[in-house]
Length: 252
Ligand code: HEC
Image (cartoon, rainbow, N blue to C red; front, side):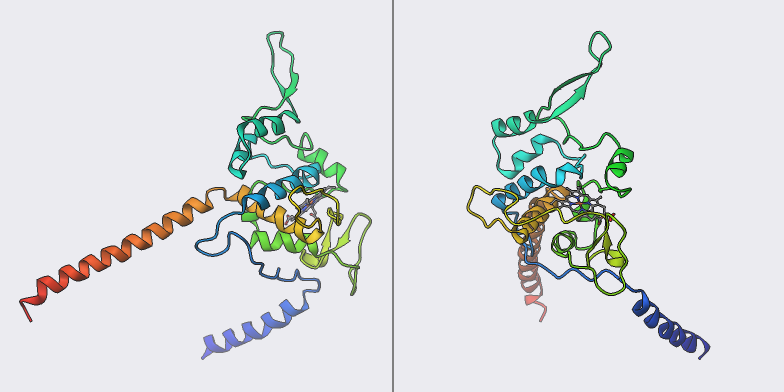
């Protein structure tokens, strides 16, 4: 009985506390993705568009240190295209024979070049807030792609008693409804070549799909293995059932 009343008291206390926490992040609505479901796969065109958005917008602040340019072949780019993309970036290499560091164009084997030399520089340039590395962001956050899409489309005029400091913005999907990232996207910002609509909504969808791929590039192989395993188990069950029937036939 004591335990039960303690439990009830606990419940009674929990409800008002969670309701009181003003500015709790709203739950990101569930989106329909190409890769949703047990048979879903990434859409290569969406991934390429998402990479374009990352490259032209997000990469100004967010690094993706775990990716190499050659990983982009998975998006449907040819070896030559990847080489050309990598070649647009500069990496510091060395030391050379004279002990000097030197700059050279990036190669497909190089990791994505980061926008800032270190976290302190990144914070200094962003009002003290660190733009997180995006290599694994889609897996590091709960329902990552839904969350990223929600944050990108979740900016609003501040309401309620939210107090914004300079450099802060109202976003209902962030804890406290405050984010230190200005809305990075606007309609028409990135020129798509495949005729897809150039809206904040479409950009957000594409970049979220791209970030999911970056965090889990082997998702398709994993799903295929799962489907094969289930087919195998079904076939195995069928055979064992037939064997059982045959063995027991004489005994009944
Ligand atoms: C001008 C710099 C800048 C650009 C450009 C930018 N961001 Fe950010 N971003 C930030 C900063 C700074 C934060 C940290 C915000 C905070 O902690 O309040 C952030 C945070 C985020 C978060 C929340 C991260 C978390 O920890 O949960 C997401 C999602 C995000 N950015 C996505 C994007 C995407 C996608 C793009 C490109 C379309 C982009 N950002 C472009 C600076 C930028």
